[in-house]
Image (cartoon, rainbow, N blue to C red; front, side):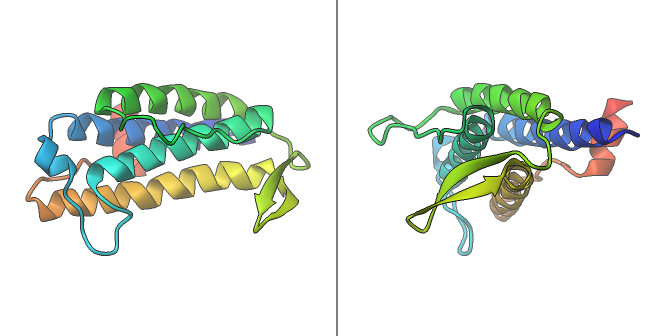
Length: 161
């Protein structure tokens, strides 16, 4: 497998996992979407929205050098809007992952100071961030008595044929 194939696989899995979780959460009631657990980011809804907005921001930084900021007065995203956003940013990350070179950097505000950060770190963070928060949502689903989807690599491999 070439490095591009490896990166593509990792980001395709990330997109598949995000969409799988969003698909399951689309059938939840408004009350269930507000459920949370101690030690998690927040409610199912706020965590899902956090995942998709952050991923859009990682992609924006990698592709344009600019951070994406969702207007603070924006209404909460619907699960359908989050799904479309995840699909778009996920596809964008798949495309950009193979374009980013080891020396490519982007300037980031780091504790109030501009700092050049390797784009490879942003790619790493995109996957790590989503994985951690998906696990939190899955824990809340479990607490609600709902079997969360299997989002591991083995299930992804099996479903890809």
